[in-house]
Image 1 (tube, rainbow, N blue to C red):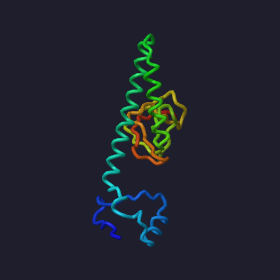
Image 2 (image 1 turned 45 degrees about the horizontal axis):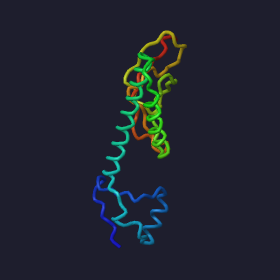
Image 3 (image 1 turned 180 degrees about the horizontal axis):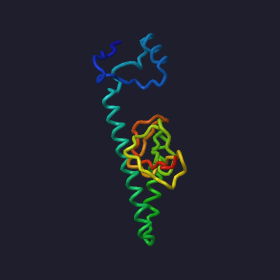
Image 4 (image 1 turned 45 degrees about the vertical axis):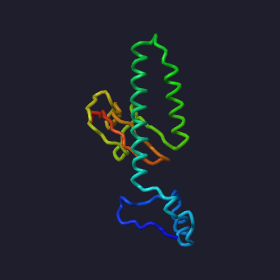
Length: 159
């Protein structure tokens, strides 16, 4: 059996094993599953994740725009659009993909977000910081971040 040679990180191959020990055991036994026909180049996986995250972000933006439109024009019935968007979100959720918008949640150092700016807010209690705007949501795949969110944080000015 011929196992493809891996010369660089870009040529890394993925064989679909979640358990590294099982993969090593399969390699040791010359398992037929570890074959170039069953391998996916890492750069193809990255392309898939980029496409998925881009789609999720655009869906999130579209939903925000539809909500704003509905608030501005309450006579317009957008329920069928929201139903369709929910079905798409449910489809991604079943596959382990979750889009998280942190707006109005508390902010703590170390959270897996990129803070674009901090704003002073004298109305917040001392020591409190809150996410006031999400510019880009966080995308998770099987509870692991695959795209970091970008947010604006308001922090208390009180000592």
